[in-house]
Length: 137
Image 1 (cartoon, rainbow, N blue to C red):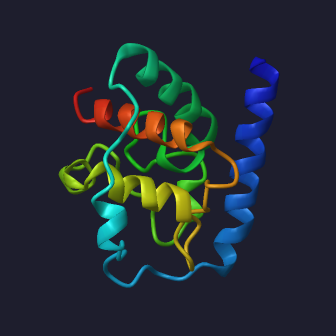
Image 2: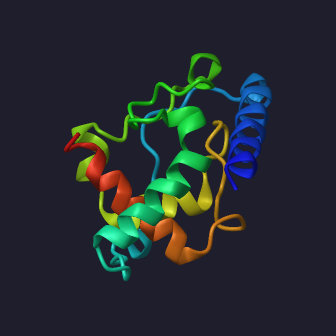
């Protein structure tokens, strides 16, 4: 299991580093449809969900966003725009629905890929529950 997780992390990092050559600077905001922003997280915010979210975050998000979510993962140095700092007040102030949309759809023109075909909706919600814990660390 651990070997598989390491392989996934390396694969994601490699794709992101290679794709960084075709990215361009993010122009200001990342618009999210109101209906998406208003979605409520259906997953229970408990230790089990957060634990699952942490495992997924470590596998899929840390190459860019870093172990502690500060946007300083190993692939971040070559990315433009830089990955979001998930501990920041700006990210923490976004609604769960906004984060769900961003994780699901990705951001065209940046290294942020869409995860809707990779992670089941309950997994994406669990990642959001984990992201909420990062500001407290």
